[in-house]
Image (cartoon, rainbow, N blue to C red; front, side):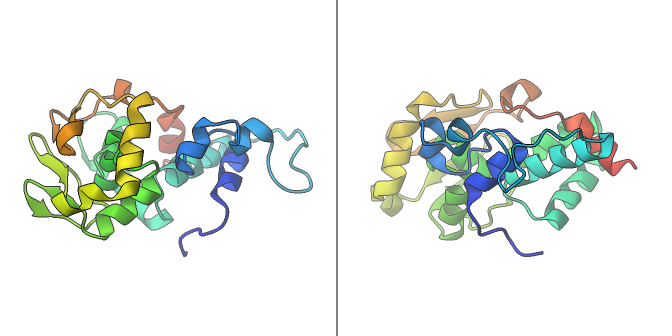
Length: 208
């Protein structure tokens, strides 16, 4: 399965919630959900009753699209979450939150996870002083994450950091805006994830 390259606002309308795939646009009145809060297509405004399976599937698709993953990648994270101690659903979210591209997005260096993934791939991010160009890299406690010095002059990164002041940086990360750097203070907690996610539905889907 190839990565989706179509209009991302359509995905938000399919799921019925904001997935924040379009960066700053998602915080304005131009957001597709604000303008047309119903599914796309000819029959998008029809009321349909979903089965339990359909509800579970939509929740999985929503989270997968939110973090920009392929099906095999998402399944791999779930299997890893199952092997860890604790609650499987929460373990899954914690793994997704620790991805380097997500951390760059959470810190406000980029306006979307898609943009963050590109920034990481192009080698603009350093972890403990070493360049890391793998978006799926899982950050650990006490690691220092920073934008490479030459890349700090990039207009897009500066604009994203400025406009991100309205977003709250998770408590498990400590951001130093002046030096384009941050420190991982701890592992994420469930309360740090503010999106409307029902992870138990995903666990039930994979348990079938």
